[in-house]
Length: 353
Image (cartoon, rainbow, N blue to C red; front, top):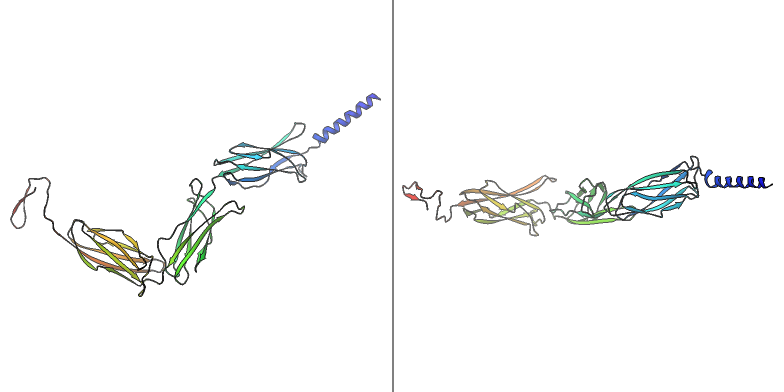
């Protein structure tokens, strides 16, 4: 009788072992899908599933750990639910690197285990989105290129991130509306001004679907009252002395009636006897722009040309000033080497000092 009892106890113990070990038939463990790239200090949920090859493994413990890189998981273990799934939260550190996370299942008898590993790229978060203000005004229906730059919190460019452009005030359109940044973190879009004068406000935005980051910037683009039709310059002719004598040149840009503000005028010296500074200027609210001509060291005649050009409209206006450079009041000539005698055309002999 006692022997039969021991047999029954042994059989029961075997059943218990099978209940806690032999019946655990998990064949695989694998991570589910998750974002491949996240930002410093960001948090994502990682899920791992146990299956038996034809079903799910429920009520088992899966261990999670960071095996390489800067980050942490919490909780460090979880029990599979009715779908055989267990989850943990991964929190990134502040080091730009690839982090590897492991999910591990070990059977209760500690005789078998399954492991899967996943990786997450941790990168600095985008921090600044800057839309570059245009250098000049445009005219109705003109097209203008707009540049925006996306940088991360370390000041490096953020690549392959979609930036959305829109016209939020005034008439006009942008095309395309959504563009991905290049390797320099830059996107270039085209604004078409639309009809009528006045400012256009352009907005750029980067928004993440998880709501963690939204960056935006705006600029105003001035659309001139009319298309320039006349460019004049004063003085039309003038005289200066040799050796860095200066004269100010002023141009006026109008649409035939009213001044045109905010357009770039380029200044060019044709004969290179002197120089201008600046070489370009933007018309003010009176339609005026100016530069200063500095005579060189050669007597002669020079020409300065002022130009307004619009490649889109295929329009160009020019105006020019003729500048005579005279000898002025030169009173002394120095030669090297000294004590050199020379004769000028009047037959008088001079000795250099």
